[in-house]
Length: 180
Image (cartoon, rainbow, N blue to C red):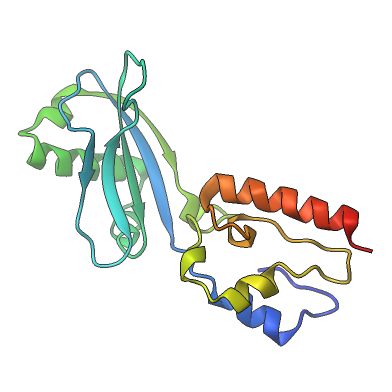
């Protein structure tokens, strides 16, 4: 999505193209009662899909059930016409699992983070552990000691997620200040 001038090397283009970056989204649904277990893992062919108690082991007075979907499974939800249709579909799934308790106790409140549809993210997280080490090394090389890269895929400790992105930012700043 970024055009480099001057153009980046073929080796770097290959490393960027190799990064596995699945579409996906997360939803938080608020309920008036807790009718669900702490975690529900759903079987999918490619990616992840599951519900989880967002207040698990927290001193919370609310009942918020999170839903995370990434990979090819997201297309089923992306094919729906609106956020409301996505919510209705999830409530229907939960009602089948819990004898209608989801619809009966749904407060109408939700938050949707649709990372796969946002212009500047276009997906969930990378799969650094599945990447070739040579590609990861190439992705961490600065451009002419002027442009340094950060993000979870650039974390040399492979922490992944937000912690990995933060660590890679520190690493990039350190390299920027010490490379000469």
